[in-house]
Image (tube, rainbow, N blue to C red; front, side):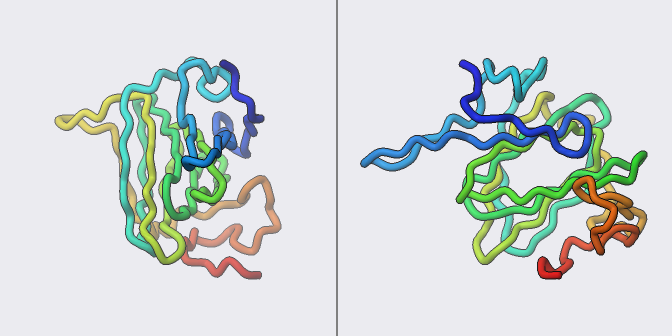
Length: 177
């Protein structure tokens, strides 16, 4: 069954965002989070593992990347999270806020440095789908500190006039200009 929602291509190749249809009735809510026939979102990807992390308010889980072809799909089941992906070659950063108030799935090719910050006053329940199994003996994760000063985006979400451009990335930058 094709997605009933439009898949948006974001500012880095391979990054996609799709709103998930919410089915509501007198019993509550229902969401389809992932289906193997969502080719517009998945392409040739095959989901092989599903994980959930619970992150306390204000915590930052960044930066890491996968160099063996893993792609991640993120869904916030509860709370709100700012998710960022950074392309080291182009110095372009994509920033997306996912929230339980607006169900969406974000596709992040693993070769981009990526991570997230838990926003708000409640823990974030992040469900993520991966295209590679986690290898306990030889993990496919390269890491760098969340406050690494070498991550200096020249573009943020396709814009060069963002006041955060050309400065070390600050996860805690105030949202008001």
